[in-house]
Length: 172
Image 1 (cartoon, rainbow, N blue to C red):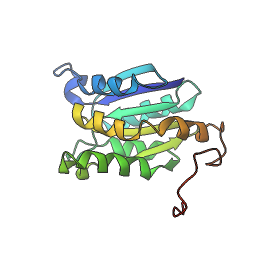
Image 2 (image 1 turned 90 degrees about the vertical axis):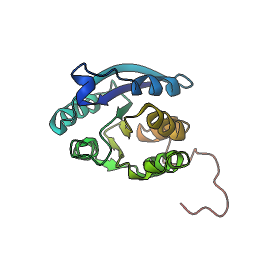
Image 3 (image 1 turned 45 degrees about the horizontal axis):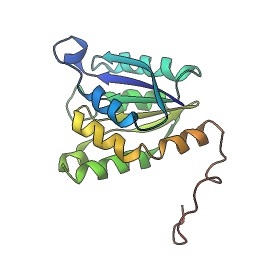
């Protein structure tokens, strides 16, 4: 069981002016795995508010995975990556590289995403796009590796030694 929190970052959804459709897309992807939603919240595009929420969610041992949706684009109010970087201790760039590459197969605008992923204590934080299609495609691109990543982060597996064998030509 992977205890998962979802935080939607949207001024309009936080004000009740727009339904949060991205959370439904995220829930569809998570339904296929060992994920249990333990928290869901909508916050405005305010860096300090999101930073505070991320710190609370990553403070204890109640949440393994935090997925944010929204605020990863180029608009001035898009501050999700900055808030995330203020909270995480180590980044996991491969996750967002995989998300952007998967998204760009159907929408070249995916390359404009500024999403980040990182670890704070024993919690993995991943930024997803705010559009339902973008959130779904991005999460689908990485959902298969998340259980292993969390096993390593939380010390249930040594760093990579229990992972499936890599091809002979791989030197990671």
